[in-house]
Length: 338
Image 1 (cartoon, helix red, strand yellow):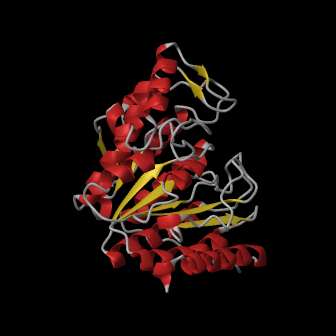
Image 2: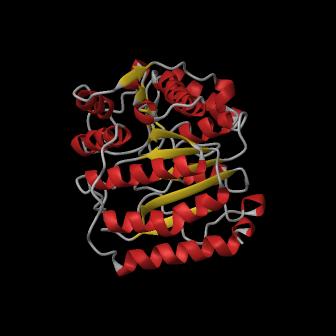
């Protein structure tokens, strides 16, 4: 498997007590150093002009000036230093590399994974929030659409990716699916949010109840996400891969196991093969260093041929209800699903 990384991403210093720290990347690389078939790539950073294909130019300049002045607290959660500007451009560049590599035909153990930071899925068009400055997956999507017709994004971070959701909410060339913990920051992503105008039926939000486990996540894939994407038929599948729904992550109440992430990865690979769609992974959250690095290692193992163990526990009634309701909301809104 190919992993994209740049040293600039380690220089985005959020402080000793901040959960989104450079130690996240160090932990991933430490675990991968013992894995077979791992190849590192150092992609180019994107230019500010590429960032403005997704973000408001005035906002991009505001971030540059904020960092040039030494940074500080952008908001209560989101921190910058002078090096954050270069780190954010590097992180977006790694995500673009991942999608371009996927579109160029990477497969098997060469499946590309962007391990940049800061993460991106909370960044909206004109503001930073939730540790995120530039929306890496959205920038990579917009760049990919210069080559292909349709992109699907599966966001399994425990938080709703409100930025990605909003950026593509009225678009018919991007399908966004989010599995997130109900009631958690930022409080968006209800089942009724399915897109507007040309994007009607192109957004699938699955606000899963706290305590949802492997069985619930797999049910969401099988009963809602996979059927929707089979109808949407994307040319590229991007996984916004957060690992904060892990049962050992310190900031959520979800119960996804490391093996569960392997099962979800296997489903994504099988779906991409079936649809003849390229596949790329872009790192989002995950704040337990061990659970984060174990999750990334599991993706590498599955891409290297490991068969993950399917969950054998029953699907909770509350989880089943959310998934079934979300599927009905989506297909009622989607003219292409008839």
